[in-house]
Length: 308
Image (cartoon, rainbow, N blue to C red; front, top):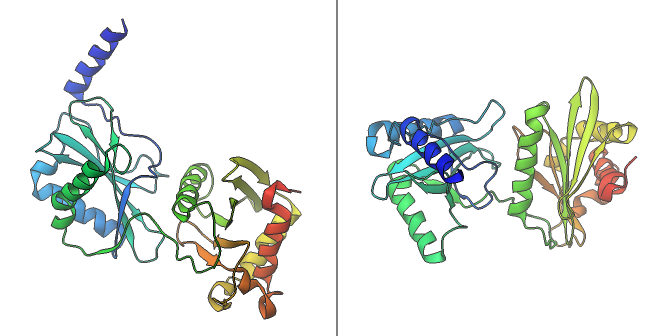
């Protein structure tokens, strides 16, 4: 019976097409950064397919380019590799690095197969993985005639002097993933504050609904979460907003080792990247500034689920 169901499903897909794209986020994807806005880059990639029909997935297979829904920040684009009879999944979105857009090479599947996506940087051995990326470069990247700004996953400019077991790429990926989930339910203008240290990493996503603040807190290493609201959170937000200039005016001392951790903040994650703040910036004449007070409040009142 199970075999019959599979055969029938395969037959339906072969006639009508079944877009069984891999779901969720893709931490292994290979990202390329271009110094261009998101929409123009999408236009360039779609134009490449328009001008070369061999890159279009054959019509009977339903792989439509676009976003999954209105809350999806990634624009998915499918290419066809005629030589291998394979479908290539890529996606595009505004980068965390201001002025850049990310173009990600995600996965590959045989055209006639149902599902069975193979992820780049994960499901191939090192030799084939390297060959696949070179092939993608020849098939797509070299033909859009745009210089690659920064190659690889999103990376923060880690200026603070400390060590963390929680890699920055994973930290940024988690921030992106959790934000995407929350933005589908809440307003997209979400403030994020976080900490990354030796054996700890956490993020708090702050939304404002009907004039009331709510903080969604995540312990990334321990996989715990908590929801905050109330006077402590309101005071934290008030001090953060009062002193946004801190990010541009508070100097840090590169000779001071930030033994504990680095702090990260974005006032509106949909439009602005994380800014890292070192502990040396919270000292001396900056110690009484509202944003410094807010960050110390985050560490004492919210970190490690000490909640109100």
